[in-house]
Image 1 (tube, rainbow, N blue to C red):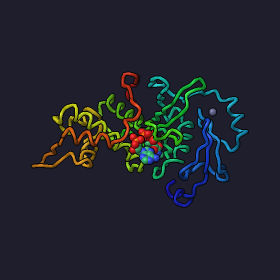
Image 2: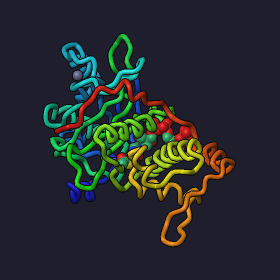
Image 3: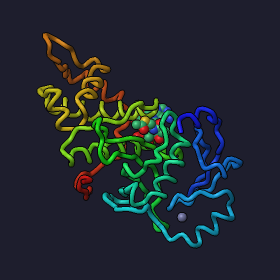
Length: 281
Ligand code: ACO
Ligand code: ZN
C-alpha cells in the first residue's frame, strides 16, 4: 500500500457529503479504483457507506436502518455518546471509517487490518439519530504501549473541545486497564498541539493541587500518561530540572497559573462515572 500511495499521492476526492455537512477534504485516501473518477463522494452518516451520486445515497437512506454506529454504547452524558466498534465484528463499517478518516490524516497508513483494532466513535445525539463527530482507534493489544492509534475530529466539529474529549477518553480507558498509555507516533501538528494542551492542563492541575509535592511516577500513575510524556511536557514548560541524577519539579504557583492560561481551553469533559466498559480480552 505504501508504494501505491507514493505513486498516486494526488488528492482524488476533493469534497464529501456527510449528514448535513459538505466538507472539503485535506489529503489523498486510497478509495477502491472504481471511485478514482469521482471528485465528490456521498457518505451515509450512519453506516459510512460511500456512493458516487446523490440519488444513490437517497435510495440507500430509504433502506439503511442504522441510526447510530454499530457496536456497544459505552458512554452517554447528555447528548454525547461513545460507541465501541470491534474491527473484526464490524469490518465493513471500520474499513469505511478508515477511508473517510484518511481524507484528513496525512502520514498515517490505512489499516486494512481493522480486525486488530477497536474504534471509539464520538456522537452528538438528537431525535434523528447519533451523528458522528470524531473517533479514535486503538489496537486490541499494543506491544509498544499505545493507547491510541489514530484520532480525528471531523472538520465541521473541530476546535470545539471534542479532540481533547477523545484524548481524555483514551486515558480513562487506560486507567480502567491499569496501564499507562501514549499515542502512536508520529503526531500531526494539530495532534501534537491537542496532546500538549491536554497533558499541560492535566499535569499542572495536579501540581497545583499537591503544591508540587508529587513525583514523575506519581503523576504518571494518577493520569495514565506515560512518564516520557510527563517529562517532555514539563521540560517544554521548563518546570523540570535534572539535578544529581534526579528530576526535580518546580511548582511555583504563579508560573503554573501562567502556563495554565497559555494551555488553551480545557475541552469537553469526560465524566468517568458514565463510562461502562471492561477492557478487551
Ligand atoms: N489552529 C490552531 N490550533 C488548533 C486548531 C487550528 N485549526 N485546531 C486545534 N488546535 C489546537 C488548539 O491548541 C486546540 O486547543 P484550544 O482550542 O484550547 O486552543 C487544541 O488543538 C485541541 O482543540 P480541540 O477542539 O480539543 O480539538 P479538535 O476537536 O479540533 O481535534 C484533532 C483535534 C483531532 C487533532 C483535529 O485537529 C483533527 O482531527 N485533525 C486532523 C487529523 C489529525 O491530525 N489527527 C491527529 C493525527 S496524530 C494521531 O492520530 C496519533
Ligand atoms: Zn447507511
